[in-house]
Length: 404
Image (tube, rainbow, N blue to C red; front, top):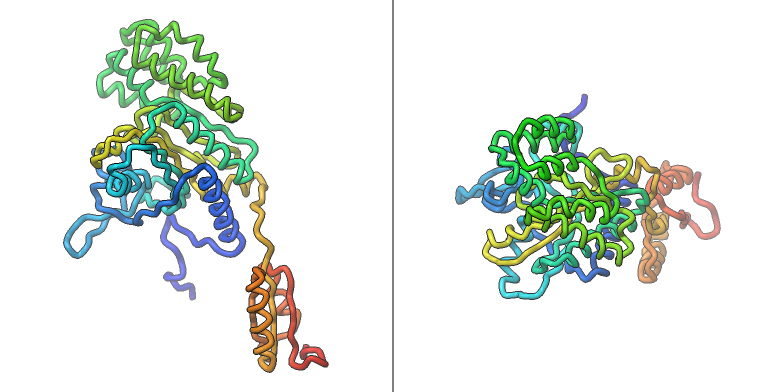
């Protein structure tokens, strides 16, 4: 009879054996890369006060949070996103720091969304935040770091799509769209229905340049010069021109990193998080229907907690990345497996002494006592199941083989 408590709830899963080893190795390599870029590690709690993820911040809707109460009656929530937690911690511990702060993290996030059929409700994210720098250089560093991270993971074919949160805001304002039409527009863009966008704006009276810009929202641009050609079209609209100029400048700096080959620009890009204020981006590759990385600039988030600091960051969705690597048949190289030493109880002292000596030299050792009724082949198979690179037997006596 199957026991129900052996199963996990919908949306979560166990990770073990080779898959778990590969996940841990991938996170370790990405952590080393963060260190190479000068980012310091930070760890925040798995749950926070509910207000950290409240509506005013523009993060996950309340209905999608896992909420509960502590003994004092405070409402708590499992984190759906790590950026607000990092913003809170930075405000608390770095309130007087005026120079840029670079932090990286890894941890699990939780989304209680029943519409996520077949998707995980608990996912692992590894990301970085660059706080206190509003320059295009900061934007470029973060995107270059993402590209290096995906290369480090083993990906070759991927694309980082970059947009700007102010473009749609400016177009909606210049077109004079009411709240209902603006919501409909965002829904159409979210579903990549750009024919629907054209149908929506066509009968609405607005400047012809703005109407033309709506027609460019679904186009992917591979080079900044393609945006430069539309610069004359929008010069009379400063917020729109400033956003496009930022994208052009960003592409130039990314060229210095040699990172522009993996970049495309999309004027109609939107994000599910409302706290983004400038550059936004998402990374895609074959074998994953969801972004493997996402992020953007959030200059107004830290002031909510009490620190005036522009910021930009990203999160790699480790689970999506590993799924993509698997479907592309890209393996994650693992450190050499351990040595399995199987010993008879009469040689316990010798086995332990040998294992300690090998471990002191940096060699991993799995130590197992021989059980009566178990043969050599069973231990060989056991070593293979747990990826041991070598099996050493210490039989009952040094002058005879162990019993079969």
